[in-house]
Length: 110
Image 1 (cartoon, helix red, strand yellow):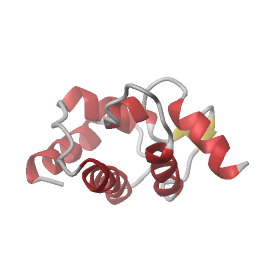
Image 2 (cartoon, rainbow, N blue to C red; image 1 turned 120 degrees about the horizontal axis):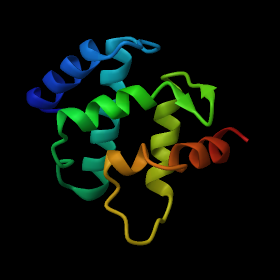
Image 3 (cartoon, helix red, strand yellow; image 1 turned 90 degrees about the vertical axis):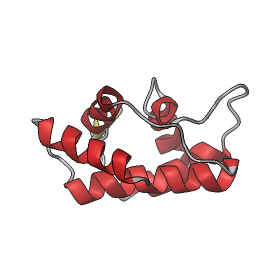
């Protein structure tokens, strides 16, 4: 992960009023996502805006109303990249949109 993205994650985390995950856990989830993205697509994940990072951090602790554990995300991310969505860019924003995480959660854990 590049320094600018990590800086934005730190800024967004500090602006957040909810801290169900530690800063290091949040950074680890983003970093893992970006590493898998790079491994799969052989290119760096597109840069994110601060508002996008803030939204992701806000949504990260909950999956379908269940309080998530940060270590679940590694399996969910792996499952996400195994899933064929058709025309999808696999951006982290897609992963944190709609029911994507919920469906991957049920695939992995049930």
